[in-house]
Image (cartoon, rainbow, N blue to C red; front, top):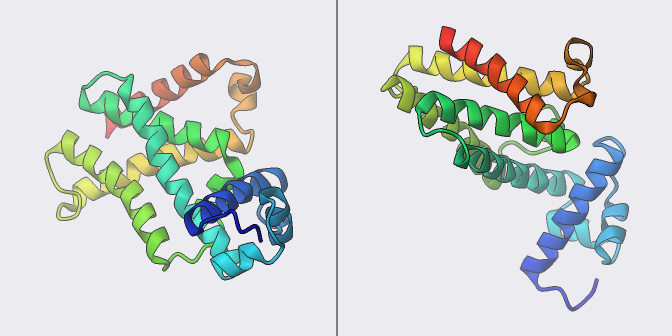
Length: 202
């Protein structure tokens, strides 16, 4: 392992390399040796630093949740300030993140590899969920953690956005919309139309 790496910079370098490896090979073919090669460190460095492959994947998934929230926030900056518009922009950010990071998205939500009891993972995933909770609280004026109807709306909204994200990354939007032929603006217009139609009914 290169002595030029400090503890924090090594972790960052390994996470960057792990993200590249995951994107290139998928979860099942993910290799610590390949991550080490990408990062330019000894082959044992990833396992030593993250206590094994699942430890690295857990840290990568936690970082993914933080990136997800960042992407959602960026979309909200250019949206109208009205609560529904902000909720829709957050949802489009969620889908945008999934489209650009399909393997990471699957790791975060569908894989058994991450240790979901890990403190960093739990905090990052909870922060992403709390963002949606706060958005629904702003719209309904009720705290979803104490109001069942409000929490039902949280789950309905999440289900709609997550389902759309899954449909996109699995190619299921191609036949209805010719998705691969559309530019980003046209794709996001479709997402907005779908989400507004669904959310206004709830």
